[in-house]
Image 1 (cartoon, one colour):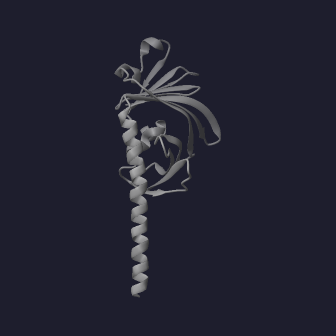
Image 2 (tube, rainbow, N blue to C red):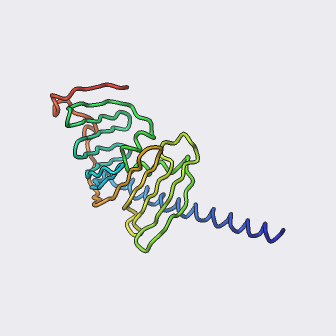
Length: 200
């Protein structure tokens, strides 16, 4: 019996150490991201069999994402989603879980609460960290993030939920200068024909 408890104690310690080490990788990635005035990322995204490519400009908790048919601005509170085909702009004040679906870098803050953290399959090129939701209300049930071992920049992000998974492959990551707040807000003057639908 004592041996059983000793084994269980060792297993528990190993799991705790694994979680702490995995969290430290995300802490480092978050820290490196926060050091940059802004970051411009080019990526490929696959959602339920549909594949697209785009860019995202990030500055703290603000971002502007551009895909083939949509542009999204988020200033930290309000989100504007412009659909080019029908020239509509949906205006919302999204919950953090909704922001996470639009911003592949949401894990920078997401992992801090509501998720168990563990290593996946690490390689000599990257750390793989797996987040598993501890609250059934979380719309993102599981996330897999691969972090470059040397730069601590994300290379790959998989977010799974109750619907289709979102898979993102980062193709370039560039640090930039601080952007004006207006960059992260919809500018009606640039899209005079757009119909604004306020869903707040």
